[in-house]
Figure 1 (cartoon, rainbow, N blue to C red):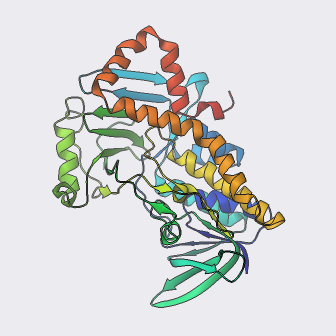
Figure 2: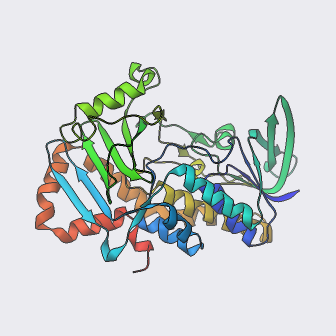
Figure 3: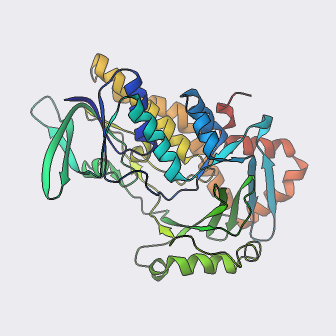
Amino acid sequence: MDDVLIVGAGPAGAIAGLVLARAGARVRHVDRADFPRDKLCGDTVNPGTLACLRRLGIGEAVDARGLRVDGMLVTGERGAAIQGRYPGGLFGRAILRRDLDWLLLQQAVQAGCQLDAHVAVRDAIVDASRDGPVVVGARIGHNGSTRELRARVTIAADGRRSTIAFGLGLARHPDVPRRWPRHVSDTSLTPGVIGEMHVRRGRYIGVAPVPGGATNVCLVKPSHPADGDLRDPAALLMRELARDPLLRDRFAHARLIAPPVVLGPLAVDVRPAAIDGLLLGGDAAGFIDPMTGDGLRFAIDGGALAASAALDALAHGWPGVHARLAARRRREFGGKWRFNRALRALVASPRAVDVAAAAAPLAPSVLRAVISRAGDCDLAPR
């Protein structure tokens, strides 16, 4: 029996495994994908997230593969623009998620984690014979067969469609908002050093350079699987770019490197998991629409917090573990969750973006504070 079974080998799972293996735990990762694999993302690591990776001793590897990103540009529908650089010389990195996820997972394997890739998890194994239900592992299926993997602790880090969290009734997609991003790369553009967020009525478009001379473009808008535009996401994305006064010339000669990826709905609500034997990490623990490149920060810090809780349970048993983990997540993420909600409310109003753009030159310290908070710069040493 393993000490810890981690379902999901993305950033949250990989970081959890890295921390646990370094502490001497026997860790097994299972993931339905083969790595390296592509993943829809804005492909940016903000300064605070990069600082977290440096504290884990793997920041230099990300630096070596990513492009330096020095700040943010936000534009409104009527030509208003707000641009600011991260304070104190801080910077983030633009790196393809395919490369980042593989880098993090390799670090976990080198630390001693066992990886079982291309393995589909069917459900959690729940032992109800004790005082309340206890998760004791997961059932996996491969080529029509099913077998059990048992562990003292199971960490569900299998993303925003977590088989474990949804299967146990812990997660749901809220009715609103239901936003679906699309993503395209273009090799004709010159990479820049500023991440971009172009806010339009009812949608926004993120633009980020990535290594190799390509550009990641992500369109996020309300939609539904039954909507016709989801049947041809490439046409939708190119149509949105072509009708945008600021972006149409830049992308007039863009070409798709690969078909756009469609994902949604974005938001996931998760009720606190207080089932002994089980911890949630990363997007499986709850997902919001991260507008400021901090989705990876939630994943990486969330994975480390789940690992700490697992070590607590292995050493002392389960009493109080879930409550302590929930309190730590509130302390770690509560302020940023509130900031992101406020920012989403701001960008939902084109007039508010215009007002903010007009006020920015008059109050540069406010702009600097917003850019710093968006980049989680408070987590980075200066």
